[in-house]
Amino acid sequence: RFAETKEDKDRGAFKTPTIRNVALTAPYMHDGSQKTLEEVVEWYVKGGHPNDHLSDKVKKLELSDQDKADLVEFMKACTGAFPKVELARLP
Image 1 (spheres, rainbow, N blue to C red):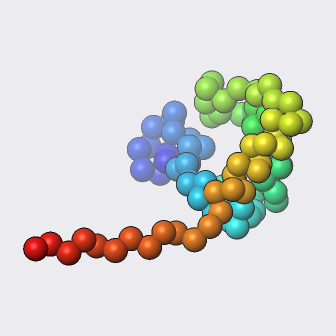
Image 2: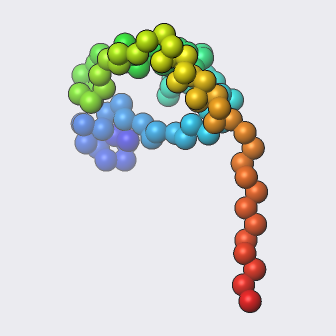
């Protein structure tokens, strides 16, 4: 984002991708540092990696092991073919 705005607050900011088919797009994060969805969830649970440009909105998450497993399963459930949408025929 910084490359576009040149604003210091945008250093380290990235476009948030869709979760559709996220289970098929490993590795994760902008640098490919997380190999699995479980690793991604753990990264967020820990509050990310502290750095000068990390938003103060990124906080540690209080998730149980079951919460984390459920979150990963939810993301995996978003995997599937894109629906075919046919254009309507106008009269």
